[in-house]
Image: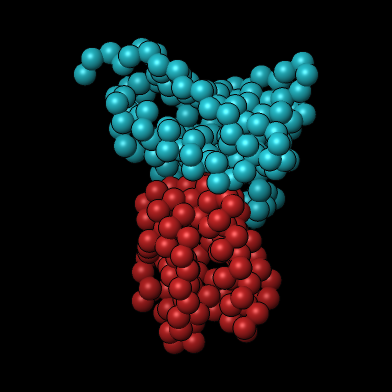
Length: 157
Length: 112
């Protein structure tokens, strides 16, 4: 397969959950022409949805007037997805470990864990004027996602 | 997210179809389980066979359903779990908490 052409797609959506479907559709279409198998693409979609959910719900507080900016960038290395909200930021290190026995039955707190698990790398930037930008990266040819049993091997670090 | 309810051998079975994701499927699941509990159901089986996708909000609703039912002394089981959905539950170790059965017959038998 020839080297993927560089491309950058930018979207700006209002903070509504239904807009997650729009961004997912753009990701799906973008991945069709890239050397990423269907299974990996599926898990990338879940990671993107978690990032969008965090931006819409926790970042922008479901305020439809606040925007979430999304950028899908493809180069010869892989795919970079950034999701930026207009919230007040948070401390990723303060997020509770969802695998801790006391947290297993919590109804929230797994989104970042899933993002870390389904992508090769994620990191955060916090703007001086507020806003959280999360960057999700997936390399072409990286080992496939393992969603198989992992009893304690994963953590939030 | 489409949910159909039926009865079998004293159990309330909810056949789930679609995505259990934020803003739609998660709410539908919550409402269906609460409605069943409100009608007096104490044994609830979730047929996951036609669930296409789940996110952390959907996982949270499965956990909420489990605690809602078990805190009332009832039983909640899941069956016919697609591999991707099972994978999402496995990596967060929820398979050690939730009662997941192979198929409907096994799930119904487990209530005996």
